[in-house]
Amino acid sequence: MFIDEVNVTFKGGDGGDGIISFGKTRKSGPDGGNGGDGGDLYLVGSSDLTLLNQFSRKKLLKAESGQPGGRNKRTGGNGKDLTIQIPIGTSVMDHKRNIEVVEINKVGQKQLVCKGGRGGLGNFEFRSSTNTTPKYAERGTPGEVLTAKLILKLIADFGFVGLPNAGKSSLLNELTGTKAKTANYNFTTLFPNLGVMKNKILADIPGLIEGASEGRGLGISFLKHIEKVNTLIHCISSESVDPQKDYKTIRNEMGSYNPSLLTKHEIVLITKSDLTDNKKVKKIIKSLNTKNKEVLATSIYDYDSLEKLREKLINH
Image (cartoon, rainbow, N blue to C red):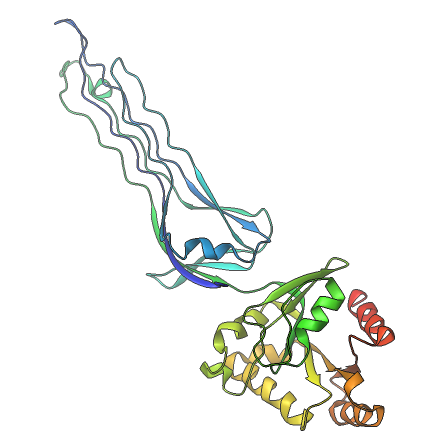
């Protein structure tokens, strides 16, 4: 199962309590030590897109608390920091205030999200000329808490979009050596797949249908993954009965979800060209070719057309 949205609570470690303590003899003064500080909680970016799955069962993640102070003015140990890996492209939202706290966009990017609490003072720290035997100490402060909503949006150079069974996953596999599941039926791809080709990141976005922006089919949950893709590769099968309608269906759904998606650079790709005669392929290209669009045809079984596409994307 692929999770791209999840609610989770992060918490810094609590500070340890200071203690009340006196020496062993009657004349001994206060010697209660301070508590240790709580650990901080950090998020760090990773290329592993499945990392939000770790929160499917564990909904609270907390850094280690500080230890209480000890006798003879001993300070308690500080709690260990907790570092949690999350996928790059993840927005960390404050769920209660509905504001973005941070966006993790680079591998290795590290962000403090919850500071640990401060250790409390022991009674040794409260001694004075007017109070030589203080019988009180300070409790540690609690660590910061963030009730978060994590939203993953893929970061890629190119994103394959189109109706179900348009050949997107097969193309990704051929161009990048990825092993995304393929089959000759709709909705084979149930979650986004990524592949790398000569340092270019390619994303296969699950097939969209009419009404996707309203939640139909795989719905709105995958439209968001198009937002951070630089260039869209709009795949239309050469077997389509109405290529113009297929094209408009996807464009309408993208525009309904977020009008800015329609301003992205786009390459229209006629797929499965081996299953249709050249005359029909040329007719489809002509019907879709305008001043604002590049239209190409390819097949995973046509080496020359595949290499032409590969070269174009590498040099893009």
